[in-house]
Length: 137
Image 1 (cartoon, one colour):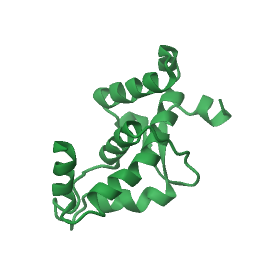
Image 2: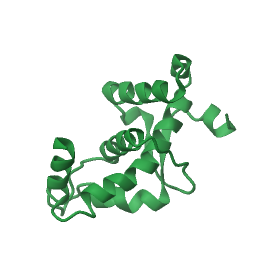
Image 3: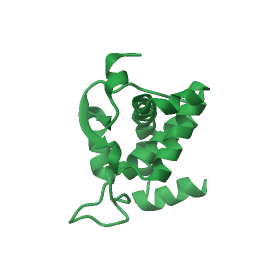
Image 4: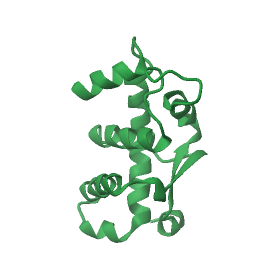
């Protein structure tokens, strides 16, 4: 376990290389909902974590572009992140180390965001409808 893993307990980091993907998917004042289907970076992050976990791919953050504070995650979000951490480590003791839970989620999200980009931005059609297709799978 690295020093950063041990001491970090309050945020996840988005790799600088993925920051533009997050910006493209997040709604803003002058955007159409079908072009930018997410209201927050946290919502995009949660989808990316799940995609990374589904594909069993993790990528470390190399260069920090943005961050999401742990306090914005809902109880349901944290339940998902904790379940993924238990599945990853095979040990419920991971629940006593919030920093480890966040690092595992962050690494899955860093891998999963490329999958999200492929499904939502690289496919023909509008991102919202591509998201609906992804969910309906």
